[in-house]
Length: 264
Image 1 (tube, rainbow, N blue to C red):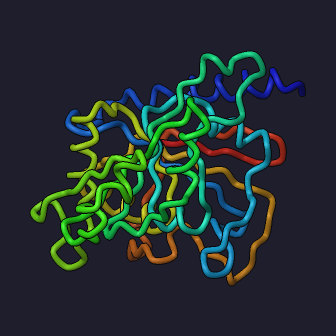
Image 2 (tube, helix red, strand yellow):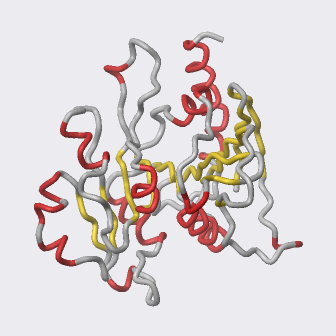
């Protein structure tokens, strides 16, 4: 299969599952959400101690690098462990001038994001990359907020959620309030990539209010073993009739990987 066909196949897949985004379960006050992650055949998304492991092949990575979302969201743990760029890098040759990178969004309740991470340093040299929005809680490291050169003068935008918009016990911003704020800032659709804490938080909230529109999971032919971390290891649904059953399930093979898309 040629590279051009790989890009076309990725575009066709997103187009094919777009009807799920248009279902009536969307909440108008928040962006439409695509929850996505890659996992091994034994259900692991990272290695021991949350270490990064390469799971997706190039074909499925082309799929997830398509510019089809306004924003792309991760937790600060993913930034610390993986140092992602969160931009479109695998694009069809000759189309680089048409690339519209998504807005990187980091959930970072205590402002632990490294100041030298790629999300902050890359836009200085790559004009197509965007500086991140960093969402923190009311109990964040206020010294970093007060000393604006540390984050905001480096280019990042710090979005501090107020105390009523945060969890009383942890100080973390509540997902529904975060999404409402992002909608006000022009985000109509967002891809949420994880890590595991973020994935589980979105699923828990979805059970209450159906905030997730599409689930996209890449399954790689890799065995990680018992030391690896699963996407939902700490998520309790009590089993049996309480299992979360997927609907409108679609599958497609990309290289050696299988990509599943469904309504959650």
